[in-house]
Length: 99
Image (cartoon, rainbow, N blue to C red; front, side, top):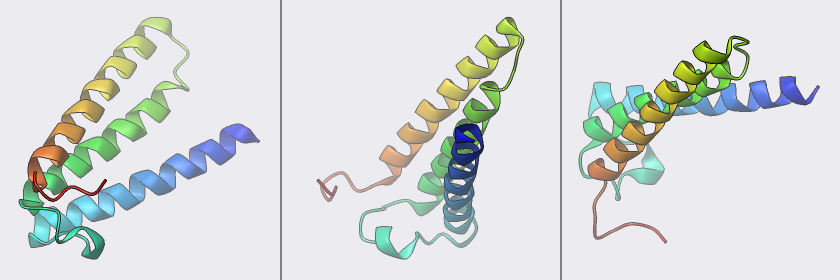
């Protein structure tokens, strides 16, 4: 049961990240609660898409049974998560971060 709950929770977060990323990449506008903090919305949106894909790949990697394939999937998902986070950080205003 807990496996299903975590699968649904991660799926909801991935979909929200993907929607925010697609909105920022296609229109060049950020989501309303982030508009004052994002300087380059297209860069932030591509980072959000990459981060969401990394989360989905990490969740999928938990179900892979082969040890070598699981290690490769985990490494790729970790690289995607870090790269997406860096792109999101670069797309934000440096002096106006929320604490």
